[in-house]
View (cartoon, rainbow, N blue to C red):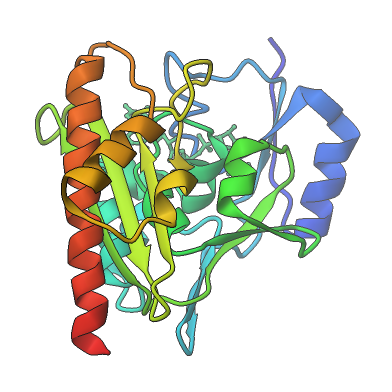
Length: 265
Ligand SMILES: Cc1cc2nc3c(=O)[nH]c(=O)nc-3n(C[C@H](O)[C@H](O)[C@H](O)COP(=O)(O)OP(=O)(O)OC[C@H]3O[C@@H](n4cnc5c(N)ncnc54)[C@H](O)[C@@H]3O)c2cc1C
């Protein structure tokens, strides 16, 4: 097969090349997914984005901007990145993979397991495209798009956020991965991956909006969480185990995060 690997050096040239080749072309960031079995792409044209100058990490006040080509290991190493995002970056167990994969690729790959997505959702992250249009990360995950992600913006890194990932072993399959945030007004965000909200949905990163407005705790909260999710039996665990785990983990994270916010009020 005749494969084209194109290396534009401006965002506008990249967009033009991608448009010219239509559905034949894919964006190529770190290539960790596109270039590996069994997820290798059979696209004929790869538009590389590593020469577009999108490998920056900027902090302006409390607003963090991550260029789409920032490697996951760069997030771990950067002094500008808060510990909650570093923690989630560490959920990608292999340093080799963290050196190769990018924040844009991590989001755009639309994986069922996307370790950084729940914490970014809990932080209200926005996805910014080449034309400067912005959408909420949750909307992007629900409605995949082929547009070039230019950067990811976290509006307030000081938002109280906690995450927990439960896996079968340190480098093994994830069972669930959950993140919550609580702001000073008591608004809560609950995001997770590993289960779905409805029986006819595939498990992918999502927000548990039915749980976000709840202010109670204890058994009542755990029951409400259980009622808002739908888990299936698979290699990661039984549906019953995942449901039980989700209720305990999210309930504990929410209670701890509410306490954190009270502690600094
Ligand atoms: C051995 C192995 C282990 C893995 N383990 C994990 C793991 O533990 N956790 C995990 O999350 N993932 C894992 N992955 C999957 C992969 O590493 C992630 O999907 C990765 O983050 C993708 O980043 P990338 O920059 O390499 O993307 P690429 O492979 O370059 O691209 C992935 C997809 O995203 C699109 N894309 C990339 N950048 C952009 C952009 N800026 N705008 C629009 N579209 C874009 C591409 O067109 C492609 O469809 C693993 C992969 C391999 C091969």
